[in-house]
Length: 204
Image (cartoon, rainbow, N blue to C red; front, side, top):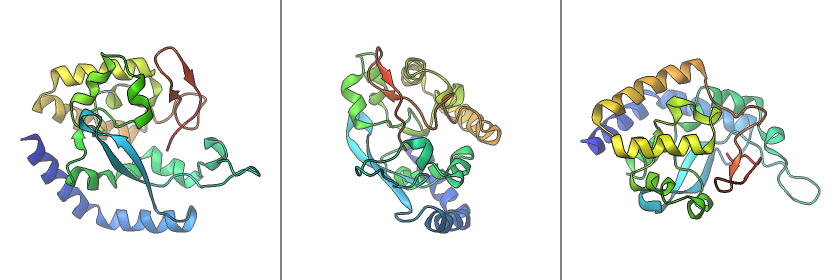
């Protein structure tokens, strides 16, 4: 049932939103440059890697040593706009069609985080990741990593069709209000280094 709904909704949204996708893609090309899509390997169901797609929001500007500049410098005003209204997430509908991502589930984070999870936190990998999830409608990036993982694990143990519908409706509300996009004081989000060690370093 969940897979059928994912396919139906993702395909419908891609058709309806196609004009917006084309316009955003052209604007990314003009304002940020190529490639238009940001592609990064993320852990899927049972931590199996897949490539997640998003519209680019950052430049590839580097310092004199060839190292990428800090996120707050590379994140453009247009990129902030895309993130504010979650337009950068739209290409993930392709991931949904491919069966790598569900509409609802724990957000797919970075591959390097998986070995850092506690046994309890690792439970979040027992379901397919989602474009939005219980943690996203309960704070998103404004809450701590530990709080996110607790919410993700709670979802794994309590997921139902009606809970998914509730999360979808709350997601629309959160996107309209642009809540919880960034952590306070950071351009993006702190990097997870285990429950006892966090450093500031965002990711796309």
